[in-house]
Length: 401
Image (tube, rainbow, N blue to C red; front, side):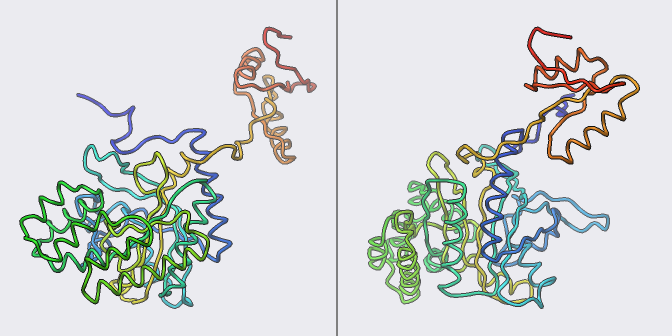
């Protein structure tokens, strides 16, 4: 029978050595950015009740969640999203805290992706949630902080902004079943024009159908908003376009115009977004490296209504794109070899050197010869032999005492 003891599950991978250092560097930079802007770190459990993610209007696709049960038979999931648990936390543990709440997190999420989707099932995210704040000021803070966070790690990226309710308003005017609506969302998100035609052509040539067909093509600068007014003629859609233009103009005033684009086909897969949404992209990385938006109705589903906005950054992708140089891991400067009977003295000397800031290793080999060979392999220049006396030995290829 085939065993899987030497490989990781599909959609996961080991993170090694330099990759770990890069991730720690990104975490350090982002933590500093968020902390300096008044955000406080929180963590949510890796296991949550399924009910947290199955709320009407905010449910995640159940087939994408890893499920298990507790010892009472209650259905649990391995955390597939960070925003929903933080909304739960804010409505329970933090319900009496002053508003707004500025929170940030650094944790893994797990999604059971379809085969061949090209996405990882396991992803580390860092992000922020600004809860209890509405309006332009809060949206500006979220988007500008996203740009600041990305700029701390990645030199070149673009940010796209859209409006979640625009797709919803158009979809509500079409005779679509729920599964057809999600297929339409996927087609627009991936700009799959062929699938878009298959879904929309049978619905006739109505203004809502024509507007939906145009949605993934409305991509660019502020001219996109002017063009959209020709297709979105109802009052609700025009109000969304006006609010999006206000946000776009404000971000340009902040000096972000060279990184900014409008994408009215930006329809986040999470259905809890209610207002402005945004994503960030980096060249040679297919998926969004950061995504977020406004979700004013979500906290109310946990019994504590309040507006909110936030974003999550793909830390794994940011670490892979982090340009050198960044702080290297401090390597041992010396190897300590305790002769038989002097192992304790070697450990005591190691503790003394480390307390002075000198990185070192204790040899686990039984002979001095093996210790010198090891020091040579890993690039150390010095071995200290601890016995009746201490002796420093240089490590030179081909030379042995």
